[in-house]
Length: 240
Length: 240
Image (cartoon, rainbow over all chains, first blue to last red; front, side, top):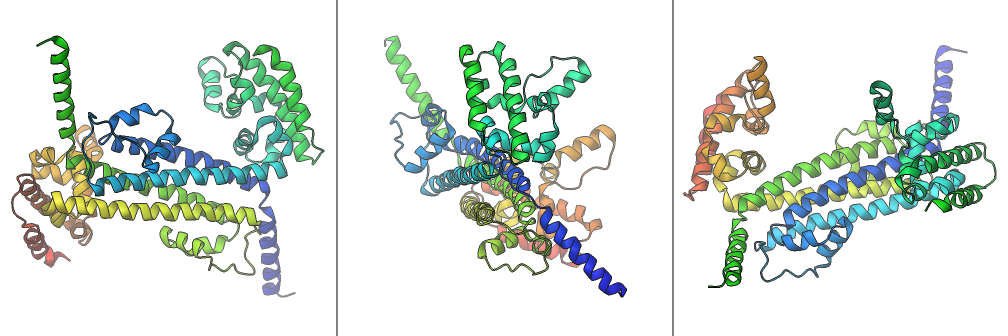
C-alpha cells in the first residue's frame, strides 16, 4: 500500500472518529452555558433600559421590581405617565430607540425560553433520572461543571454537593474560612425551602440522590427518578 | 402661607427642574454606551454560536472570519456541508437551537444599526461640527467619556487627544512607561490611514480640530465642520 493511500485512509478514519466524538453531553453543556449567558446579557441590557427609560418616567421604573414584567409593560405601550412625573418629555426618536431596546430584550427572554425547552428535552431524553431529582437546569449545570456525564458519575456525592462552590472551597482550604455546604444545588427547591440551619443537611441528601441518579443515567438503567425525588421530599417534609 | 402649601410648591418646582435637567447629552451618552454594549454582547454570542456550530460543520466556521457574514450565512440556510466533513450529524432539535441563537445575534446586529442611525441623527442635530470632524461614533464616545458636552468643551485639546487612554496615561505617570499618543480617536480614518510613526502627529491635529468643533457646537455657532475636516485632510494628505 502506497503512502498516499495509507495517509488518506488514516485521515478518513480520524474524521470518522471525530464525527462520532460529539456526544449529547456536548449539547447539554452548550445549551446550559448559553442559557446562563443569555441571562447575564438580558440583565445587563435591562439595567441600561431602566437607566434610559428613567429619564422619561422614573416613577414607573421604580414601581416594578421584576425585570421581565418591566420590559413587557414598556412594550405593551400601556404604561401611563403621571401628570406630575419628574421625568422629561422624550422626542419620538428618543422613545423609538428606547422601545427598540425593550423589544430586543424581550426577544432575548423568548430565546432563553426556547433554549430551556430544548435543554429540557435533551435532559429528559438522555438524563431522565438526573432531571427528575435535580431538575433539568441544575442537572445540566452539574454536567457542565464536571465536563460531561462520565466525569460527573465518577465524583463522590460529597463532590457533587459542592460543584459550583469551587471558589469558596479553595478559600476554605487556603485560609481556613468556613467550608461551603453546597454549590449550584443551593437553588434547588428542596434547599431553598428550608431554614438556614437545615440547608446543609438537605444538600447532602440531595447530592446523594443526584449521584445515584447520574449513575443510572450513565449506565442506561431504568427510570426511578420520581421515586428518588419522592423519598427526598418525604424525608425533609418535617423541616419545612 | 402654610407649611403644606409651601412644601407642595417647592416639590413642584423641584420636579420641574428635574424634568428640565435631562439634556440631549444624556441621550447621546446612553446611545453610544448601548451600541458598545450590544457590540460586546453580539461578539460573546457569536463565539458561542461558532463553538456550537463547529460540532456540525467545523470546516465552514473556520472558512469565514467575519462574524456578521458568518451569522448571515447560517441563517440563509445555504451553507453546504462537505461530504467528508469532520463534523457530527445534528438532530433537528439541535439544529433548531443553533439557528435560534443565530437569529438572535442577527437581530442584535439590526438593533445596533438602528441605534447607530438614532445616534447619528442626535449628533447631527446637536453636535454637527463634532460629527463632521470626528465622526458621530467617535464624537459620541468623547462626550460619553467627558460626561457631557459642557465638560468636553472645557478640556484642552491635549486632553481630548488622550480621552479613552486613561489607563495607559496613569500607567505612564506611575511607572514611567511610554506616554499614550491617542485615546478613542485612534479609530478615526485619518489616524488609521497613516503609518505608525505619524499617528501621534495626526492625532494631535485631529484633537485640535475636534476641540474647536466642540466649542462651536456648545455655543451654537454656525456649521464649519466640513471645512475643518477638509483642512485636516489637506494637511495630512502627504503622509499617506
